[in-house]
Amino acid sequence: QVQLVESGGGLVQPGGSLRLSCATSGSMFSRSTMGWYRQAPGKQRELVARISSGSNTYYADFVKGRFTISRDNAKKTVFLQMNSLKPEDTAVYYCKATLGSIVYWGQGTQVTVSS
Image (cartoon, rainbow, N blue to C red; front, side):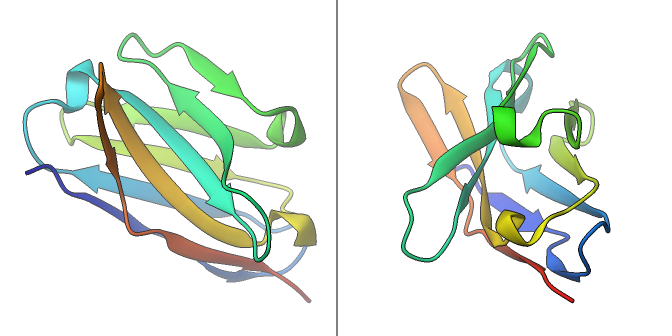
């Protein structure tokens, strides 16, 4: 059973930064596409960024230029560096691992951007 554990969320002022981490277990990490999603209250979960096993990246338009996704295969961890945070970035952020038809989700970490 693969486990994904997110960390790094918290309360930050507008314009601030946070770095989220998603640590995984098992042997599939290096072959998996890893993604960060978020879900704000009353809204659907949405893709924020993803990184392929070959480190190709994709970003949603609303985070381009502000967020950076990266991965460390040796540590089986994916990161999301979030800069210039806005109140509308407030959400629970989830990590997702995809390998073919196999999908795993983490439990989420809360990010709150407020003054």
